[in-house]
Length: 459
Image (cartoon, rainbow, N blue to C red; front, side, top):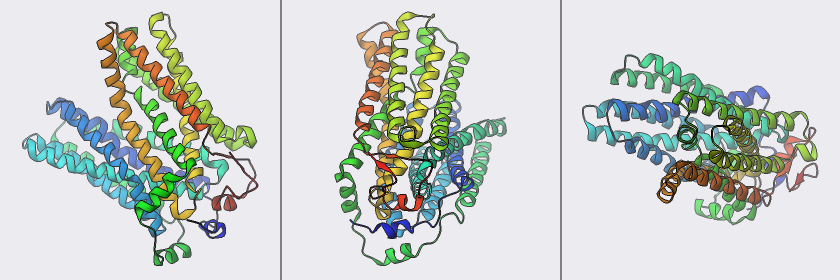
């Protein structure tokens, strides 16, 4: 599918300002506010208050991740229509409805278990599809309107604002849930969902310009979804980047559920200490993101502005930190675990922000008409890998403990395997075309096609 660069370059008359980037980041804040109730509060209520097996909320969350395979279809739908905003708003509507439905299902399960679980399955399907549609098309919109030198910073802003949604919602919801009752859970969830939807709608209102090309495109016959998907996956760069996203996210998420148990079993840390350890890791992630955002925005250039370089560095630092953590177990209490975990967080942050920035850059490779489908493919790889990583990480520990009686060696083996996965991801990333951004550029011609733009070095 060939597109004239001039037609694509007219998709935006100007790039997004910092304020507009922050506004779009608020969509992630709203998304995070709804999701955190699903993964923490509703999860806990099902296991503790309702005394359901832990596998019940686990299966529901897995169902949410399974729907991420639909992301390419959502992206294709926005490509056909030519606009991303309706899909973001529609996705948030489905997400918020699903979040409220999950709370209602949890309350209903206390008296009618079968009906409650049936409603929960439907609600988590809505959550997964809504989050997939809104999250994917938000990144597509950012990829279209954010100039190259700002992509690292834009990825950081979006990620930080999503975490802010977690951080603000969880304690506030917890405050209003006491004393607990099913009715309170429904009321709190409904309030959060309404506020989140309103914030998301206001955040995207008027940001995406109406384009003549979009209206004209709807009158044309578009290739079917399968043909466009096959074309995207047939391209070496897109295919390699899909594999890179899957492998790196598998490594990134596999340690999430085993780090705190490792610290408790091997280093005899208390629950409070392991919680602080997790906070230290998240702080490292934020520091890594801010570092890359600052370097690419304020320095840039052919070396320090290279997303390919920072992606490789992030994968390498993460692999080094995981290897260090694996070797630290046999050392014992004298090993500086906190420093190693902070280093892991920093490496993860460098990798994450560079990978998201690269995703934005590579999404427009085939032109505006395929951008949503491309982003959907990578979003699906990310979502499926993230869901599988947590499960496979814990499964690998259990399997390793069947071989060795000492938990330290079981955990060390899994951490080392995750480090190897990051090294594999590093090697794959070096074979993927990325762009180098400088401090001075023409964002409009870059949006059209960075392959044809002499001002950028395609690698």
